[in-house]
Image (cartoon, rainbow, N blue to C red):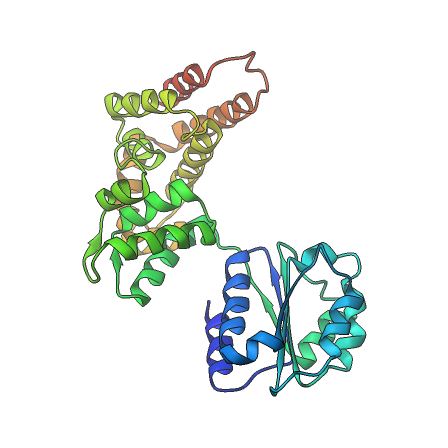
Length: 333
């Protein structure tokens, strides 16, 4: 995220604000910025007396303000980082009076995760005027594979589109969890050598042959044999392959097919743009569209919605995951 990079650049150049209010649904960037401030605003010697970590569930706004108003010891600044500040959501507006009269020698960092500060309130306006108000928005799953590639590229690594999609399929859109797995790959693999699905299977533990990504492809190709093999594998490993996740991914895939059928321009560039997918996967969509005309796609989507309810226990009557998977597959193909 460019805004996060700019914050880091400004801090390195000495343009440090007295308050950083980090809020939003995506915890990853909030943690990264807070960690960067903790490591770069003060020297190692200064941190011992002038850097404090507080936790929202253990303190009050009065505690935060009291610490923020004290003067640094043998340093030009002190840093106060309030983690998990969302626990103070009921009283967070009380911070407004401090923000309106900031202590210039204090750098106050508020990590307000999974929530957004109300734009209509005084605190939002006060922080915007006096410091940095950073909103960390959650990425959509179709944006995460690009995030993985860009993150690795910035560190001298390359990953294939399929390998990136495997990670997204297995880990979802949790950037913190994905980042930890990327760190593992960077430790064991060489730079400038493309990371493949084999590497993902070996070092992260995701099966490159038996996963939702390959099930989607097998169904798109109407490859009943391969799809059945994957479904049987899922039935034997239900904890690693939740039925509800499989239905959700297939539903998203068939919605894309429905959108594809509604396009007037089926050129790869246009399809990739309209469906918000990597151009690498356009061929897969085009091939599946030939096997599933619009009328059949609509029927499959209806079937998937029904199976989603069964997977959540509605009308399933104790049906096993194995039987649900078989019913799912038969209803599609």
